[in-house]
Image (cartoon, rainbow, N blue to C red; front, side, top):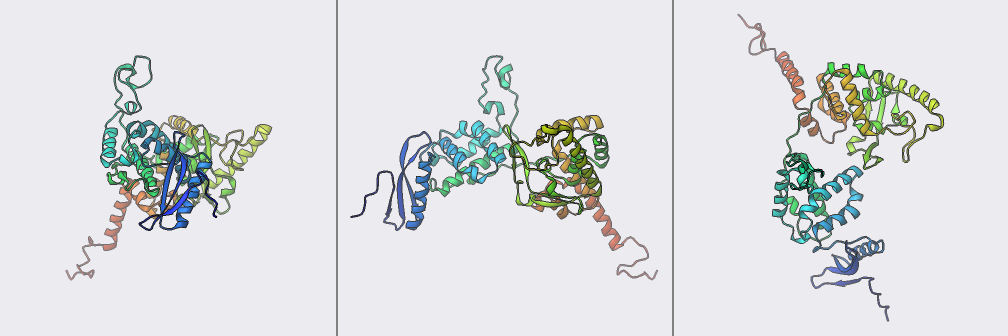
Length: 424
């Protein structure tokens, strides 16, 4: 006689419609236990799903159910699914948006009762509300309390269009996973139109401003970094994640293969944001000289620091741009450094990311084609390059039109309509 399965081990049965189902006791997000069903076309498929459920139960990880509150499902999704699919910075952003805005507005709705109208109404109200109010600020708060309403008036700081788009992306991703787990029949966030974003016009430094900034930065201990950002268009985190093994000064090349970001209170090394971002970039000669001098300067700093020269936990060996004691440079500190450099150079204040735009605009002004710029900057598509720098391509487009005039040569009075000399 077959041994009877113990309570909680789960059961697999065949349904009348030909599919298989399995049931097992799992944890809810509130810590209580409930019986959960999974379905599949074959017994093996259901057995795999059952094993996954049981493994999560053994680890104390809650399982989702269709009737659970949407806020509880978001907690489950962010804790168990999202970390495996999202980069740390994106996950941190999604957690903040969920905690501050989504859960307060939609958290009490049942997952299987969430409708397109709920999502559409939430996004509409979100777009038109003050951010402080959305975070729970009370217009009747007494004076002295934090929040925009502490002084008796609303700051009217509305969410940017990009923030609204991110909110929609969080909803869409979370509900798509609920569909995969057969908790809901459709992704209601996909039915709602994605909020449009009017891209902000980039304001790069022009050639004269860039030269003035770099001339002022010559005395800075990280001069090679500023020159690198302007000359190659690397992102801030990509530049600070470079090691000497990534650079081939003899062949004037560097390879971008990691970045560094501040996530809450930690500096985390990871891979660049897209596959296209992992790339090889050619270096101009003036940058090769600056990097050579920077390496010599770093060796002198290492000798001066002595035993104080220590890498931070998790920091790769041989970082190029470190502090004076060998630790990774905090990306946020570059913002403060650049503000001071702009002031000393008497140029308008720009962000570190604007140096990336400056690189692209300088390349365009020199007639470099968009495809090459896309590869240099690590854009995922050429459409992104063309859309981002459409307004700074006017000079290039005007030059192209003038070259067409030269090619056709229609203004020459000695040429006839067929390209032959006129008979006069």
